[in-house]
Amino acid sequence: RTPLTVIRGNLKRLLNRAPNNSVEQIQLSMLSDEVERLISITNKLVLLSQADGDNFKLALQEVKLFDLIAVKGEDIQNFAPHIQFEYSLNPDIQVLADLNLFQQLLSNLVSNAIKYTPACGTVRIAASVGTSTVTLQVADTGPGIKPEHLGRVFDRFYRVPGSSGTGSGLGLSIVSEIAALLHATVHAAAGRYCYDTMTLVGPGTWTAARAA
Image (cartoon, rainbow, N blue to C red; front, top):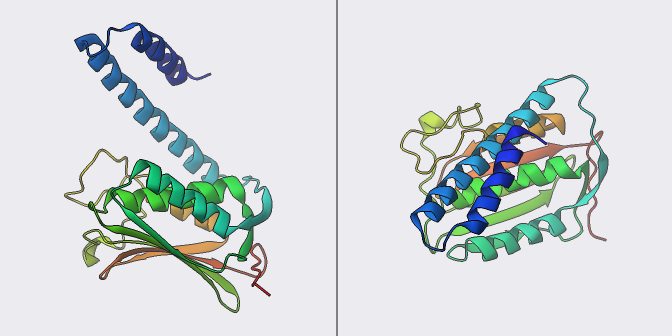
């Protein structure tokens, strides 16, 4: 248990005892949100530190993209019902990857898309198989990334000037680090949609299965 998790537990106990709608409850709730943000940042920094090491061990297994993307669609419907979700992929596409890392990568891309998508906007996920690649695209109908920022969105702690919210600037840098661990590349492109695109390259670490 880390100091932050101890603080989280104590805050939860205090919140449960605080009178409903009281100033005490509001203040404790704000503190709890801040602790959760710090825990999230700490976990991201730990992952980046591990990725920087030479002894990071991948737990490779077959990952069915459709199943992971369907879960993300349910998350969007539950937590961001004001956003429309679309997906396009062959349900039989599989890759050989570390499931936990791939889930983290996909979560970061989708969370980033949701953050910048306005009400009634759309988040779209597509996957396709080439001769030696699997391409995954996460797109949103947000304002897009200006060309002068495209080269820096995957830098650690970088946030596009004028960005709303309280993000840490680590989400897309983690995507880039995980992609490198999985022998993949990732790049962002702006247009009508703001594309966060990850290209997974095989053979070798990656394999892809087409539908019969």
